[in-house]
Image 1 (spheres, rainbow, N blue to C red):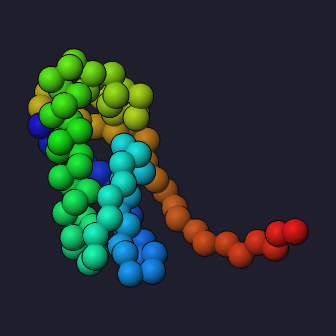
Image 2 (cartoon, rainbow, N blue to C red):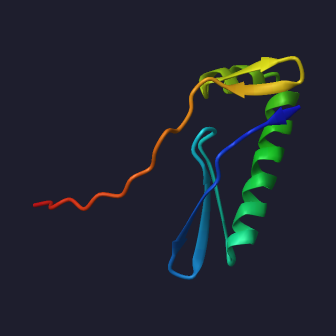
Length: 89
């Protein structure tokens, strides 16, 4: 199955944090590449486990995906990412 995802990479101190917002998965590593690799591994393991218990299709639907043939298509799309500075009390 083919699945397209977004990977966000953040730096927090000495760690790199990789997030997949569509699937709500997160991982970390000591380098950017390690964090991304760990995230892809987490996704693979979670999908295998959900598939074994019959929960994968339901999870994907909750995340906004649908299966078409051998491809998983996201029905939503991130159209922007902005940083703001807010003054808080």
